[in-house]
Image 1: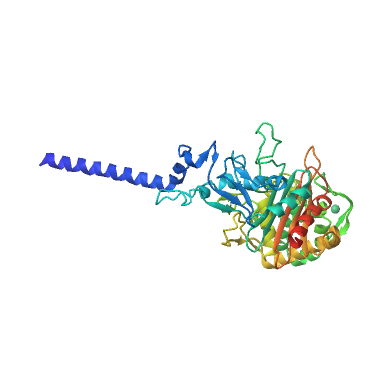
Image 2: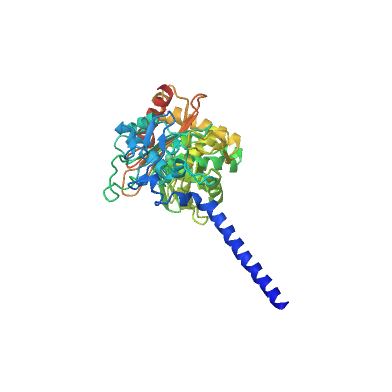
Length: 442
Ligand SMILES: [Zn+2]
């Protein structure tokens, strides 16, 4: 009897071991099956190291890359190849956020249930949200300068333009050693840059919601060109004279914003940087932007003032700022960006700011254009914007221009950065105008 009992226990243990092993395998198959299927020993989906299946199209159906060709075949136009290199990618996977890297699974089209690849054996096509002609217009507007241009539809989330320079030709990419620094980085998704005065749109949101409307109404600052806090000089590009809240943003007065930052305080600046999504990473069809990083030391008024002006340790991810522009355009809630034109689901972000705050910021951004940038420089566009001229040590400033246009047919938000250049409105403003004119008129 004893013996039998022992055997039963032993059998039970064996059965348990077998069962848990099976369960573990099923779990791994479900979670990692796609990765197994894509290992290099499945050689029929790879050819000389690159993916040999799938095609990449832009939103208009232009074939950007054909992996089924002998080598990957790219679009003929050299300018378009350079303009879209970071979005489309190359056979070597140099740009991790590109279609050739990030959408591999989709192009292989591996099916876990049947264990087969896509029925056509040619793989699946991916249809990107970008418009390659708009990307070319943006690339041409940047010229030989380093920077980035991005435009997205703040109603649907579709990113129609995403250009990052320096760029490369995916048909003949340089070796990693020979490439200029930043060549293989999509700065819009993966960059972190000093924002300068475009950050004042976050400080302004905090001021509108945290200060009383009476305080805001009577806010006044007399700018002499230099403002001292604790013996530290905060300089403006010129003496702006007497400015109110709206005037402080339109003239981008650092002295006035140093005072506004002190009034709002380090805690609220921190909270609004988060609320406005500048420390958020968005899931864009399985591609993610990097988070920005900011510091607002409660015990250091000078650093907090500089942080509220968009300098000090502020590091901004352009994609998250573009989404915040969508929130201002959309009454306080924004739309998560999309990189595939076939993905038409619309996902809203959490509420960033109150609808009344968004309305107030729109009024101020329109005032910026009327008072400082000149409506005549943006003919036919109902444009709302903020410029930034970010000081970078040892180089000329980064010129920024960000905002959106109101247009039922073209509800687009934009962000432009031209590195190592000059003033935001003078350098980045015309780039934004060229791209928007192309979108609206071509
Ligand atoms: Zn000033």
